[in-house]
Length: 209
Image 1: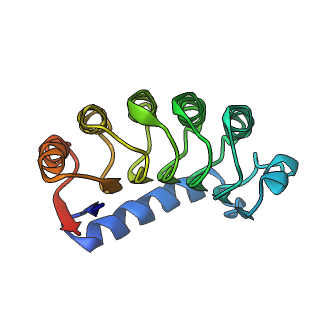
Image 2: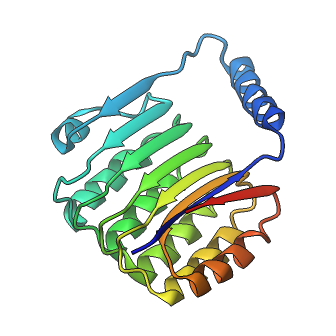
Image 3: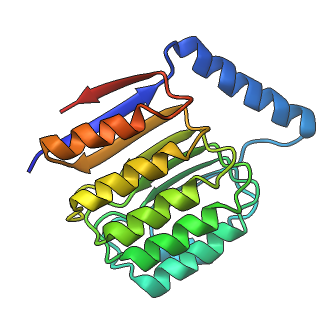
């Protein structure tokens, strides 16, 4: 099985610095006394016991925790309250997530109005076409999301899922930095690249095998 990583970045690194600086300055003006709050979570038990609503950056590493639909609903419920969240790193690889679970979680992110950066590792699950369709549809509603990384490798993704992924990402108009990690064959990746290159704000892409 072959894998591919797709990196899509600003044409100039300086533009990314300007964007981040501008975002930080705007928030500092809104609340000069507010400091960035970060949280790293390494177990599902810790996740359930931790109040997350005050954090700006959250890293949740729940690889191989046998998470199924019920637990995914609880994860989604927690994320709904994270109104200050600006950056989320969510590793749910090697669990038992299906399409409905991904729908719950991705829909909860729509309420995170300040979310700018999202890293989502969904590898080694069973999200399927329905899961991918709902994932990208919900992410397109995240109005400030500009940096996105998604890993959907080892999900037995079929050709229709690549089409849905490409179509959905085209609706994510504010994304300027995109990284995808996927399983592919040559024909599918060509079609996906054609879809992605039509995204308005993306300037350059670098593909590495």
